[in-house]
Image 1 (spheres, rainbow, N blue to C red):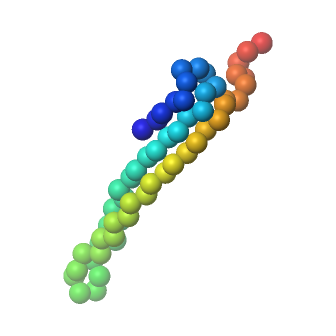
Image 2 (cartoon, one colour):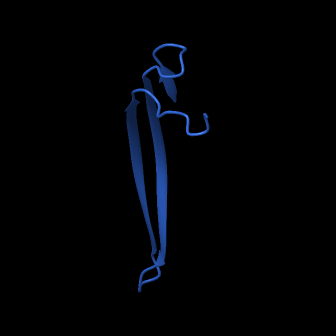
Length: 56
């Protein structure tokens, strides 16, 4: 999800992301599944943009 403060190219932007990650390590020595689950939340506040490298 992105939210931009103003509708201008260099306006501050708040980005929020969420991921559910599952790790499947197969089975242990007893035949039980070894599966771990993790949730990752990312919050980013971006101010401005770098200069356009393609301008001449």
